[in-house]
Length: 313
Image 1 (cartoon, rainbow, N blue to C red):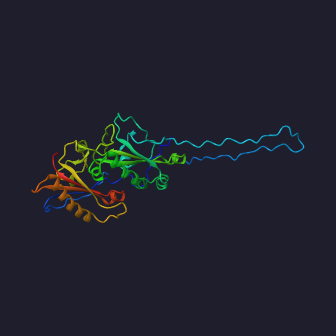
Image 2: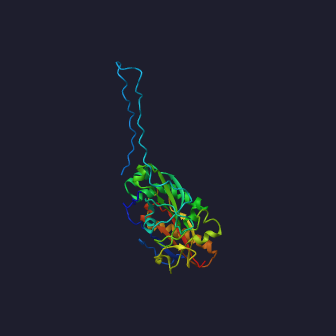
Image 3: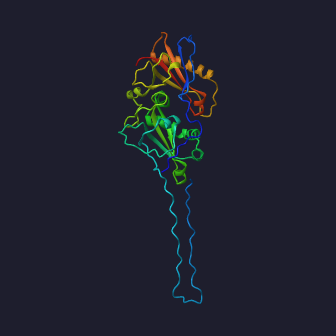
């Protein structure tokens, strides 16, 4: 059974983010910062071989019939094609890397799983090339288009609501040996982040998990004097917190180049001050914060800013 693990490229993604906390009037100093959590199976079919017939001098009563050899069987992939709804147990390394290239088999959805497959699609030539090159970053980027758009649909919410939550996706692929044997799928698994490097246990099914009031417990929350000092990252709002994600906004398309942290911060200040004021429904002063992708995370396709309100609920 193939147990290869993709390791080439950055072993650990930078899962920190640019963060800031400001007063609504904008007079407080910006506290933005950046932190790091930081074989080829062959198959061949033999050509048919035909025994020579008897010579003209031999008796024509006993002709020799042509015989054809049986073709060699195609190699069978060691891993089965996954299906949406299957549950899995993912380790911290794979969760941080965002890519699994192992024989990660399914587990019962009633036994403490922390990942669930929500989409399976055919492997593109770009993904296949990245797997054969053992390049985890390129695997993730090549598969992101298939997985990213399908996650909000699985959770039954819009893209912005999903970005305000702790739900993210990781990519599963067969190893190069299984690809040579015919495996040609890409798996999209949903996980629930719990801090910078941990994953939380999932409910029996995540389908529709963010739809309705029940989804509030899976939103992103933080416990810290200010977001810039939230070294443990965000977690689900079921835990004690004093910051809650209240909106998310797109910073650009996948083809847009990173500009600068200063420009992203300016956009966050304008957007988040208005969104948090609306959420709190106040004309008084208040504190708000934001989380933005770092330049490294931008390279991995992260394109959303998230606004936080200082709150206890």
